Amino acid sequence: MSADLLTQWHDHLAHGLRRSAHTVRAYHTAARRLIEALPPGQDWASIARLDAARLRQHLAVRREQGLVNTSAARELSALRAFLAFARSRAGLPESLAPRLRGPRVKKGLPRPVSTDDALALADTISDMAEPWIAARDRAVLLLLYGAGLRIAEALALPASVLPAGEQITVTGKGGRQRVVVLLPIVRAALDDYAAQVPWTLERHEPLFRGAKGGPLAPGMVQRAMAAARIALGLPATATPHALRHSFASHLLGAGADLRALQELLGHASLSSTQIYTRVDAATLLDAYRNAHPRERGGA
Image (cartoon, rainbow, N blue to C red; front, side):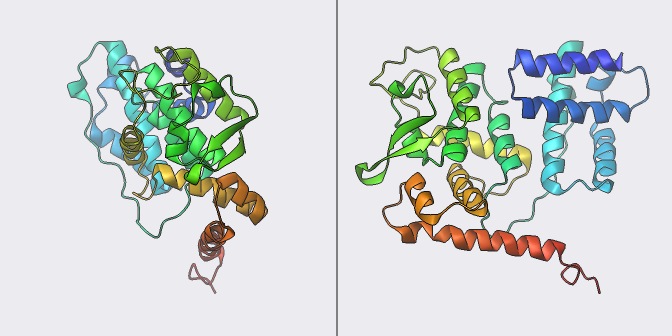
């Protein structure tokens, strides 16, 4: 029976909601762990009736296994979605939803969003809207993280960039144009949005549309990302612009040349790009503090 429940959950995520492979894997795994921790013979009704105390106990065990706050918040988000699906399958009301706060995430200096968190944000933001809007918001976030665009640059893209190839031309500050590279995951997200948007995308008009067909406003993306950030337990510094910072910091950490990075980001001067050397140094210092035995209180 449990295997059948998990199969239905997997199919709902992969085919019903068309979530990414990353989200399907994470949400399916979270549900499997929960079912394995319950007595045998569970059905949708019994899972839908799980209360906050039982979920809290399950997450406490996961924390003992080494789950950190951000991962615990992400797992809680997955379990909430799983229980909502269980209620819908069992025909039970939303009032049964357990009230459970996510773990607190320690606030600190602004840091780039990790790769896993960036993808989780893109997937979580698309869990919170109807399909075409979900596809739109995911495409926007992946442009910020995967191509380093400013939010204004992404929202100013004309529909003529479709069908998306390996490169597109972006107009940035001061009317300066640059060529950016689109990773396969970004191109796939743009194609998915284009296939679902209910409005005709004329080549000279904005690519990204609001719910009524007009140009998409930055505030809509910012609010959607704030909700996804809260659901994942990420700090307030995880903003749309932080995804652009993450793009730059991760490229620099992988050995990218500062001049090449300047071109990709569309900075007018190299001094604007050099800030990322300090961001990357801060990230390395965090890693040192977490790994060095003296910093952890060792001998």
